[in-house]
Image (spheres, rainbow, N blue to C red):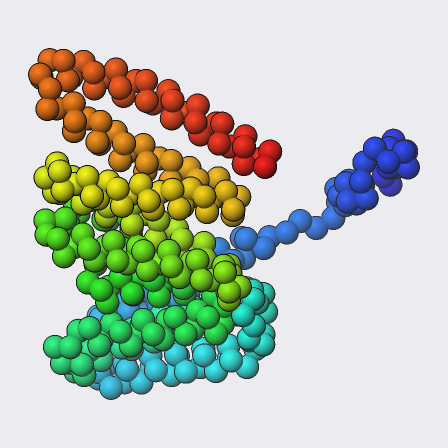
Length: 325
């Protein structure tokens, strides 16, 4: 029985139908959702199954032939994709809801099995020889096709990572910063090319409304890779030549700044502002170091304190503009 007070408030129009319905469910002790708990267990199950099979094969490789291992992996892959093909929703250029949580993880298991199959064949039989680019290109194409055909964001992330491997780099910004692999121009241009390419894919996904929801993943990876590559290029070259990289950064930052307002995305707006702060600070501090050491250190400390405060104020103001706009 629902408290009559809530019904009176609803009758007076003070609470909405949805709010009254939620109150009724709570008072009647309605079932609560365990959707995410089930998805977590399914994900862990797929990962544990893949890991367990790998350990089992590794420890018993002497008693199990390579052909048997490949056959088992191949059968798992075929079975998973056959089941997914049978139960999938019709293809659409727009977002397609998954038939069930189980569907997503069966598809993930099939995809991991395919990658294991290709990797095992290359490792054991060297089917691609020394053409390692082909060994990564084929899985990359397959992953992109799977992500689009079955509309799976997780597999799209794997495809982007495979694209980076095919280009000869590591895609995660964390690993990029940790390794600091900017000792040559080729690495800089490769990172920059990948970042810009992903941003272009994000733009076309939104503009042509073809898997528009994929644009966030492309944009997220692209903005980090492009900004980190440009800032690293700025510090890599001499002062005068580095100004060209700073100009490139400014043009890209302005475009992404405008685009963030169009998308009404505070996340991408914040990312753009933070990277811009790093670039401006790098230019300011690098310029100060041409001055007398004692004066430059004092000015550097004053700059960091003042600019840090200004950064917080700017982010708060932009957040208000985004909400009010």
